[in-house]
Image (cartoon, rainbow, N blue to C red):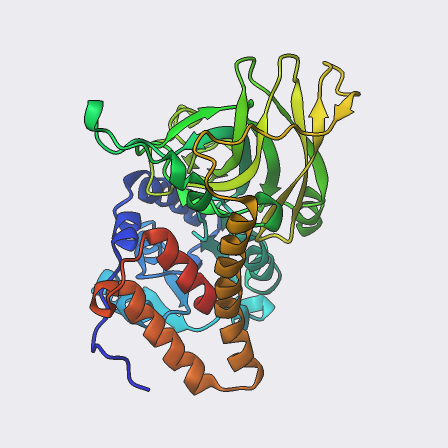
Length: 411
């Protein structure tokens, strides 16, 4: 099948990413250090339109391989690298369009530097962990350098609500829509991208905790150990009364400064490290509870699991003593004053939304399983057109919806 439009334009969020100055500056500085230290041969995983590959050439790289699975982005990257390498006879720049797990090099031909900006709001959702593992075992030479060097996932419990529309007496209270606004369940590994700095009405219910600390530059077994299942204690703020969500973000040591120092983050401004600027990333938010805390509540215990891509948050209990030894059941919040939507209605709506998303996720696997490459490519092309220009199909798609659609078909 031929897609209905001859061209696909870049989505707004992709343009925001390419023009994200803190992101570009952090990776440019890291690539300068990496090329100077490790050598001039660079592999850029998930290169997109080739911005980081171009930065690698500017940093002194003499050979750059960009790997991108989306055909229209790969074609754009080829043009970008052709122009960036023009007039430099000693430079070799190329783009491979396909799954990066199909790319590997024999020992003498492996790369000095592997760079991968495979970061989403929550840090792990673009599969940076499995792809970095592949790169270190199949693409990077012994003693080579990875960019970023490390990644931390940070989290906090919050009480977040829909802001009122308008101001003063004319403001519209949106609270009746809240059961349907945050359908993502933390216990199911789901999340929504929410910009907490863009007007969301929220307050932190707990202190910030470190969930995972990943050292991509270290031995591979260290990453596996760091991602093991564990229990984490979210110590509550003294003023915390309610909590309905967990929010998490990444802090990355990209590699342009001192080892272990965060130089790029998706944190909201309230929790952002001092040396990091605001970026195009939002935060990952998922619903919990809701819970109502009584005086004396100390901390919420959560069991954290991950497969290296998705994170599930399972409530364990509430501690009421400083030692954390008295574990109680988490108390449910009072019903909202409008109370018109039953728990059964909310669960049914969430189930229907989950079924539709599951079918979308299963579609590319079913086509790939039977070897129907042509139909899979047609579905991917149709998804790109739908995501790029939803208005032509009578749809209004937010960046969060578009991102989940493309991830389901391309990752």
